Length: 178
Ligand SMILES: [Zn+2]
Ligand SMILES: [Zn+2]
Image 1 (cartoon, rainbow, N blue to C red):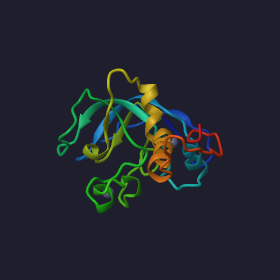
Image 2: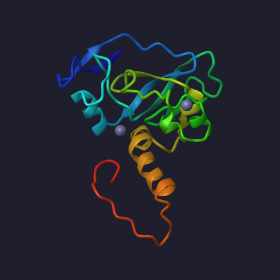
Image 3: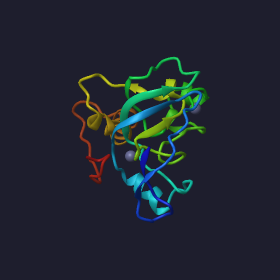
């Protein structure tokens, strides 16, 4: 497959032919339909978060399932899906309590493994992490939901508990703030 690969921190990424990803036993392979570019990708590229080099970034994705591992029960080839930024293991106490974003065994495409700046990306623990896309939500729209939208939505609804009539100040208008 083709992927955007960087050989070292800060080195200009290059469109490169690489081996297709192997499908995890509990995961899927997704043919990427759209992928966002996030400040977090820049941090990984700059070496602020260690990644295995050479590396393929990208964690804001949507696409179509092209392969499923033998232990996946909820998804089939052809399903249109998106995923959260932090993919929980689906089995630990944090995941079972709905706190997959702090799962100690979490995987993150584009950080703990190759990401979505590629034709194909592997996602682990598919039954716990994949989100089905209705036909009315296109891939570009969906790719913007898993990282920036979900982060802001949870901050406002779960942590800030903002209710109708409350005032909210947003400091910083990046992807999450906007
Ligand atoms: Zn992001
Ligand atoms: Zn977990």
